[in-house]
Length: 516
Image 1 (cartoon, rainbow, N blue to C red):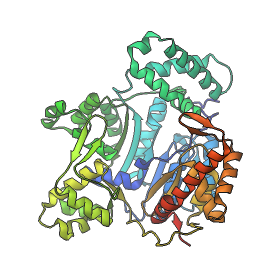
Image 2: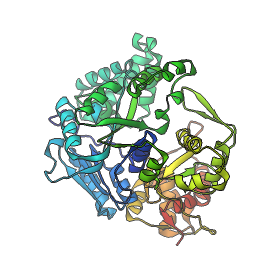
Image 3: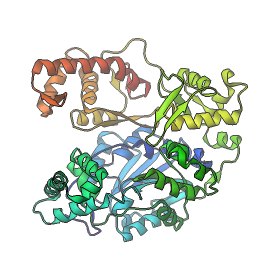
């Protein structure tokens, strides 16, 4: 059926985890943009509006036991799925509310974090006003709100695709999935027959090809709702200003650096801009932005000095993303290729390859003495934006000297996710109390880890093979389905060996598994 506000409820959404929604990601976005989040990393409240199946807020609840997490969704199937995860995962710090945004409990209280992903662009004006009322009423002073939305101008030439899909689907019989299936077939026909819209808009033809590889549940929820809007950045700024929120920054971290998002020939235009809001709007034009993850704050204090930053966010831990980073180092972020070389990057990277450190520890490191402190901080933040470093809640644990034949899953939530996500056809997110976020693995790796944890290494290949065959999944090689059982068994054996030697140690370091 279609809910009264035009939202599809007869088809569940797809589960997924998004790192940008983690409190630690939102807090880093704030301090990167010289705003101080008031939330304590040890005790905070987190509200997710339109949580879908709930895998974001439940994963975060398992990864942040000191926080309190509340998810809200109108779809009863979504709420039941999340409630089952909460029960099976033993999440005493999480709860799900099955209601619309106008029916929240009067005693819901204040939250340090509010997140809504995949919501703003898909709701009516009335529901949008309810979102603003929630932000005004329930976001604590100093709190952060994360909102994602379909952005202009990137969607300008793609909007007809949504119109074609929805109009054709309305003419078809059956449930939402069958209507989407028929509408997608019609859209592909138009593209293949070279309808002039696709001839004149080759990016639209490529977009359709990408849609054919998506789960139909995703396509239904992306395009079939009655209400569907795209926004310019300035529209959203003005929207949340009505809830007394101001723009803080965006995610991923690279999007806070215009020089990483636009071609060099536009750089002079941005160097003379005195307004962050104007720069963001112009950046979207130059980069043809189609989707944004923006962070807004309520009365956030300004971080003026390095001492201010250390006072509000020195709990954040920085680490190198890889141990084999070489200089000069090139990073391709799409619009530009950035090259990093020289100091303090090389000394900083060597330091963070050896140890996971807080900012104060980095600045006190002997190998960085003599460097300008502001230059080190700039290199650190730019390194995060370029993917050289990452921000986590705690230093990673040491890997054991001897890898276990039968590792132990530490949290019942992760045991539940491994058991249900194995060969489920989708990426599986495990909760890491070390990073304060999720750790994504493949559904094949989920099956391997689950078998290792439940029955050990002896006979694991045969058990994984049996589960693979029972799942109905197929294996592809060079674009062809593999039918030779010996080839399948050999590929699984290689995947198991890789998981035992590489993945299991990482999961131990992330506090997901234990050696015994």
